[in-house]
Length: 170
Length: 266
Image 1 (cartoon, rainbow over the protein chains, first blue to last red):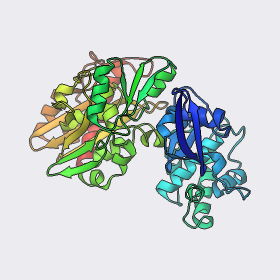
Image 2 (cartoon, each protein chain N blue to C red; image 1 turned 60 degrees about the vertical axis):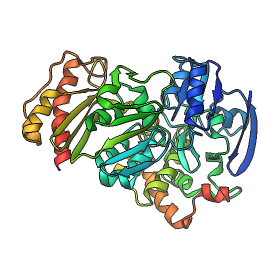
Image 3 (tube, rainbow over the protein chains, first blue to last red; image 1 turned 180 degrees about the vertical axis):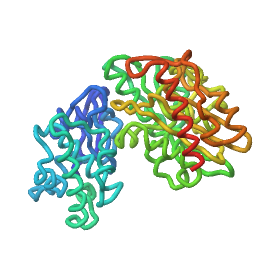
Image 4 (tube, helix red, strand yellow; image 1 turned 90 degrees about the vertical axis):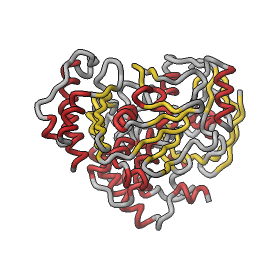
């Protein structure tokens, strides 16, 4: 067992965990943040994507101890507490960008990361290419792509330049 | 996953000491080969030596006619680096095609080169540019570094610290990705630096990355896609599996080499 400390969704957390504990297990089983999902055994599906120090990372492929001192954002931290949905979440709702919802947290975390890296005007080709690490079995991706394009544009108007991750960390 | 003890050394020297002390230890760089392997219980190193806290292993530097990339530099940082995009755009493009965005935030050049996966991209870049792999013990030329499937010239306790790429006059990389895994079914890296021509192939060979002397000879006469017209390589020595037969891979080598030269001369 070893000690680990990090910040998750703006809150300092510590744990005493087996070194084999993956970040996704720490988030789900120790912190009870079950919005991050485990969808495969092979680091391919992206249902586990969170943000670590502002970057999209597959939480099933890092050990929790590697995140010592890091700033982690999960789907639970994306909307302001007691506030409205984040524009990207709202866009998924409006554009029917989900069916079973299993891939959705990973899709949204990846989508926000795409906007952080590539801006607010995203064409279909870019979005589909950037989603190569996120798999969906229900939707055929069509509405996910539409949702991300819409959410990206809305992030440019609503958020005024600050991302929820930055706001959560402040 | 099998249990392990992890270590987070602060220097290369400490890391090498740990590898010497525990000869069954594995280095952890980006972790996107090691951790999936451990999750499947295909590897169970009792000790893991994490390199993420070692100072001085990341960074991209242009020095004279060479590009030096620290071993722990992440793929995304190579892909988006202005220095790489301006001076060796084929390398930035290669890094930007590895895995997917989240993988590229973690995966490292040192890890890729040390692992020498036969379907990885960086080995083709190293061989295709005549890179030098710098370790804590010596400098190894790419032509002597890649020994076979998942095998390199690295000795136990030897740690890659950086990779030095001489700047080519022209370079191009074209990858035919497996549609599911996005690993290179076949990838060809070509470069021209003065009279030195290199054509390096990943994904196709049964024994890992290799050069194609016949293509290099043809390109010496004229560095253009037309110089390779109709040229093929034999299927023996190529790997075959459910993703593609040896004949298919051999065929792709010719196709992609022509496209890579076209990209290099565009």
